[in-house]
Length: 152
Image 1: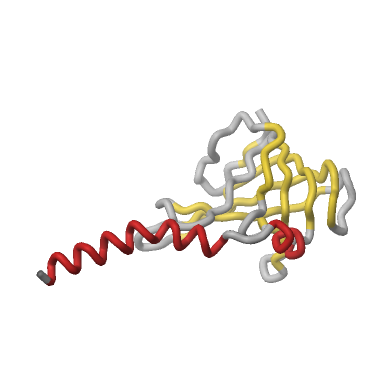
Image 2 (image 1 turned 180 degrees about the vertical axis):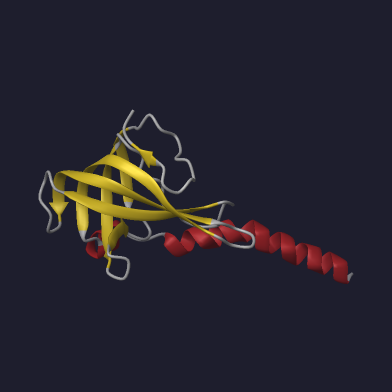
């Protein structure tokens, strides 16, 4: 009987984890806009894998992309200026809202939040990416530190 209870508990945790992770990140658009330091259309000029963080089980890969502001809705930068944005990817899928990569050549409606500790912009948690306006020819980026990706 204990084995059945353990199995059921494990099944319930695995079945409900994605829903719990997603619900924790759902936010009202007004709240996301309020928390964003930059809102607007950006073009991804280049991206790079800057670091692979060693780990026992799941490895973290840190990326940065150079964005050009095409049209500004909110923020202290001007159209034509550039900003640096960072994000992480992991060697195994994670539960919850994981930032999409910034792929060279794409244009997106972005909501970015300044990370003072990292001295870089990041997607505003819970809804930084509004939509892709122009797709990239890249589908993914190589997880090799030092590799630079330019638009194809």
